[in-house]
Amino acid sequence: MQWQDEAIILGVKRHGETSVIAEVMTRSRGRYLGMVRSGRSRSMQPVLQAGNRVDVVWRARLHDHLGEYRIEPLQLRAAQLMETATAVYGVQAMGALLRLLPERDPHPHLYQALDVILDNLHDPADAGELFVRFELAVLNDLGFGLDLAECAATGLRTDLVYVSPKTGRAVCRAAGAPYAERMLALPAFLSEEQSEAADCESLAAAFRLTAHFLNRHVYDPRGLNENAARDGFVQAALKALQRKTAPPTFEKAG
Image (tube, rainbow, N blue to C red; front, side, top):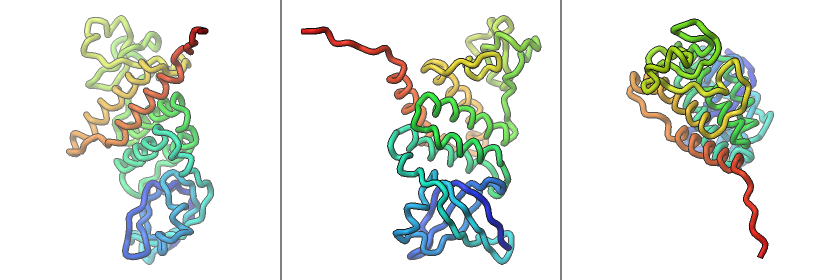
């Protein structure tokens, strides 16, 4: 058997003296593993770095075998991804999210989202918002999507400021006010009626929102802990955004 596809490197593991097992997210076939002979060579090591976009040819005698890859570089961005903390943690955290999905299960929209986010991880504002939307997309593909389009109590599609921690459905201000202390905040930038960019407060609320439902529906039932790279990304993104949006300071003339 053989197929060819575009893919993004998620990680590698040593296999024998010279080879590696490469884990990639393919455009049309989902997350896939395969052996790369001589993957530890000087020529292949720069290619097999997380975040790089590559062309892969997979071969195996049978479909359920591990198979072997032939890999050619398309976009080597791993070096750029090492320049900021948001990028370093972000590529790891998104790889961990994709590992929650079944292997060899196609998710072409997640591949496209991953490719776009990897090109924007250097900007903390863009990185944070895009990462939250990526987490929402993963939750949706796992069968636990949030309904943020209309109020669960009234059907209204305006003034949505809460999310029910049990149902994952949006709640408008009036309906949710009596239960505000038990509700999760719905950040304005995730609302369909607004298009404003995230600030530190709304981005932090968004991270709390997705973390709650990942823990409730995925990590806790599977006996897993939240990936440490996510916490690193959250802290780095909030810190960088705070620096970016802080008002300038001027020194007094002596």
